[in-house]
View 1 (cartoon, rainbow, N blue to C red):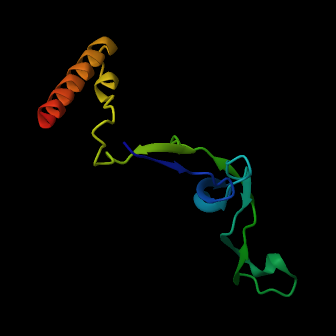
View 2: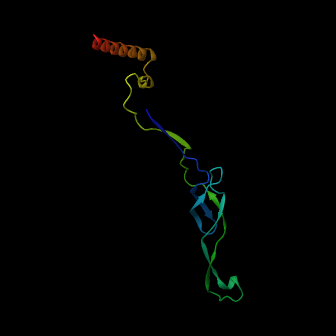
View 3: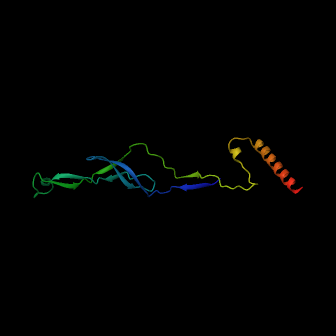
Amino acid sequence: MTFTIKLRLSPGSRMTAEYECPVHGRFSRSVQRRFDGDPPIDVHCEQTVDVDAAAVWDGGVPGNRMPFPCDELCPLVISAPAVHMSIGYVAHTGRSDPHHPNQLDTRPIADGMPVSEWRALQDKKDREARWKQNRKVT
């Protein structure tokens, strides 16, 4: 049998996390993971807010709306349960055929066969193989 070991070690990789702005509500953002693998605790909102120009500076015309960045500090919000991504796993990739004739097949033991029965089966196969070999010689 052959196995492949696949590792997923990437604490600095990007992930999608949900945050909640006090002005705009919930939003998702692609963020870089912290060293421990979690998303940042809070981020700044990148949405824009329409503000009355007169409220921004003295020379502004009342009623004239201007977009300004929200820039509120938005805390991380836990939404749906996170799907656990394992760090690594071993994948069964099939049998590596052809097998050598003298290679032991231990799959029946893994399937629950008692070792004593498996040894008796192996002895029987060995006797048959010796019998065939002796018949060829004589």
